[in-house]
Length: 208
Image 1 (cartoon, rainbow, N blue to C red):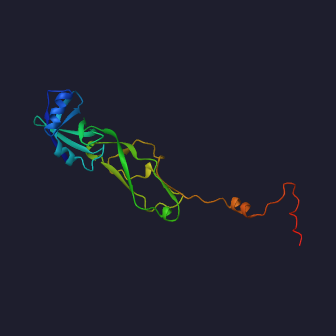
Image 2 (image 1 turned 45 degrees about the vertical axis):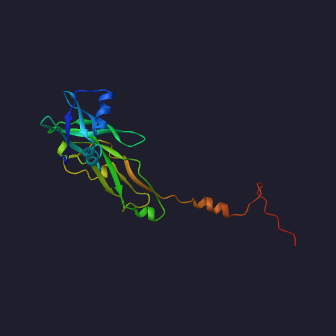
Image 3 (image 1 turned 120 degrees about the horizontal axis):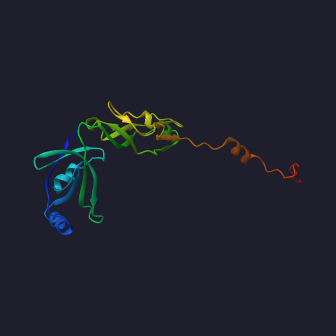
């Protein structure tokens, strides 16, 4: 269940001038997209900045306003490219008790055996689509790749999703792979042989 909670206020004024006044007062303009309506809000800047540390797009948070609590995702937090300050936040409300389909990020950790033996690690897949009840949704999927040997791979179907979570993405998608590039033996042998004339003649002997 959601463990991060934000207390917001409804705002009636919209537009750039109103948003600027909010930011000067230490508030962040926000919107929560619900199932039946979209509500304009504002948040305490310090509380929000502190609360979003470590969150992912699939982390469920609660947003409280007008005495009601809403479960939602933080879909986006727009920042000033120069100062890094958050300018606007978009929440997407979810319906508790109904099956949810969304994407969950993948975090790999560990130093694979194959890499220590000279292989190269590739991690082409960074998120998967799943289906579950909101209470069962993991904020991210942690994958230990330390046992991965050369020319071995971990696929989406191998991931530990947890009880009640159904994989929607193809189970054959590669999450992590260690490639072990070896120089072709034939190429090495050819490089070591003396050059022979194209006509097939034997190499001429040097005169003493």
